[in-house]
Picture 1 (tube, rainbow, N blue to C red):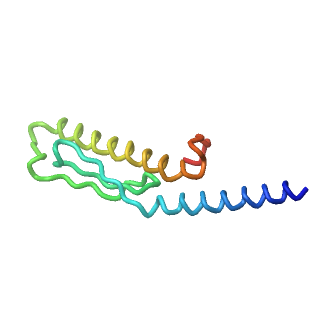
Picture 2: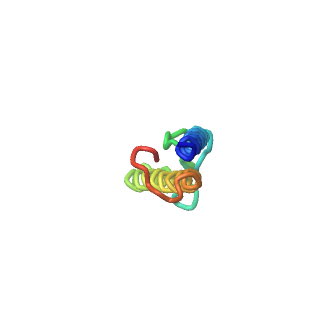
Picture 3: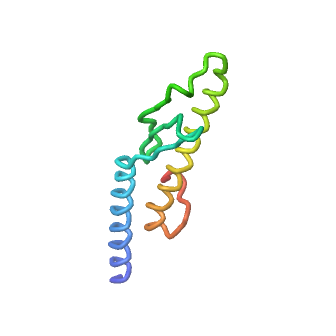
Amino acid sequence: MNNMNQMMKQVKKMQEQMLKAQEALGEKTIDGTAGGGVVTVSMNGHKKLLNVTIKPEAVDPEDVEMLQDLVLTAVNDALTKADELANADMGKYTGGMKIPGLF
């Protein structure tokens, strides 16, 4: 019975640490870029888009599709980096296990 209580305390402590780590992800910022930095997007660790920066040289009225592709590429770059950040931060507590709905 004592071992069970100790195990439950450890599980509760791990849950608290994971919640703190998940909250901290929202305070971290990730940048995704495209076109050598002419398009940059910023998002937090919860994958909320915070900012889009487009340098004037990326804007060509004759080639709107290129700008759309650059924005899409930058967003996908930031999403990939956000996933990597979440996996690195939360992996400390999950031992590399993928827990559905957590991250």
